[in-house]
Image (cartoon, rainbow, N blue to C red):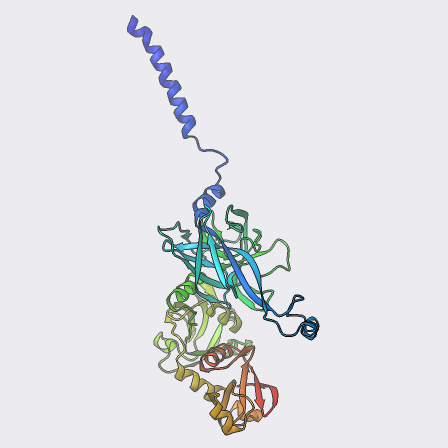
Length: 457
């Protein structure tokens, strides 16, 4: 009987312990998926602080010519004094060796860059590489132990309406977190510097200078974009660089210190309604009008007359969208195209390469109708030029686009569209970008006069 009398007490104790255990195991209702995602990613989000040192010749500021002249008249020439400007932004650690991804505009013109981790530890950072066209930069710090990293997701399967989280570290001590949804993808916008940025994620999560350069996370805590505070003209709208694009750019910056743009070795044109009727297809996509021998396009199987309708599972609407998308790829990237050929669907993969020097020379001759050479004192003296800047036109191809508008040997090309050219490398980059347009505007110097001329190759 004594044993039976003790049994209910043992049972009560077991029930109480079981209930307590269940209470401990029950999840905290405040720990939402957003909270868990931030907790996972926050250790990898850092503060990026920059210092820009400029020199001023007078106490009123060197940017005011009136006060500058006034100061010199009364005090004479004095050594310029240093003026320091500081700015704050965010970044995210993408490799345990201290590799950090941020925005180019966060570190532009910086003479000193420091990075502060979430715990308050501060490091001097080295700029590995930066690319203004995509607003991305890579930094590196030397830490004595592996650093926490963010999990990289993909931006290829983003869902309109899915929850995203923008996180930053503007002060180096605490994080800022905002939430919203993916409002749109593939957005093209013009930033405050009049630079055109393409293929952006649009979100209603607040993105500002404080979290610019930090990660845009999905609900799993994976980075799907890099916050970019470059557009402040609309309230409640933020933009982020897709992580797939950021990954490709970052790999180039880490490997080369600069971005080697993707070159396919093809020319494309819009598929007009007339051309669409001729080929018997819908007026969407781009028509391959030329494939250069030995180029990546030919090696990947592209042919003249192919109609490209999709790139990496996303549709191509026109020539503009084709080049906007291409800008997010680098030399070495594999591009998966969907194409129509003789009315049948085909799938083609092209491995992009960097544009070779000899192709630029050929493109300059066959497309613009000129051959150029880097300017020098010898060339300037030979042609009677007043400057040794730019590229000298050494040949004008008869009947070409340049000949039709009257360019002559000895003219100096100073600018191609909106890009100044001072050497072969800048001319190559500018010509590659120009080949994406229907017309090309050159700034040309002849004697002491400068002209804007439009070529229609």
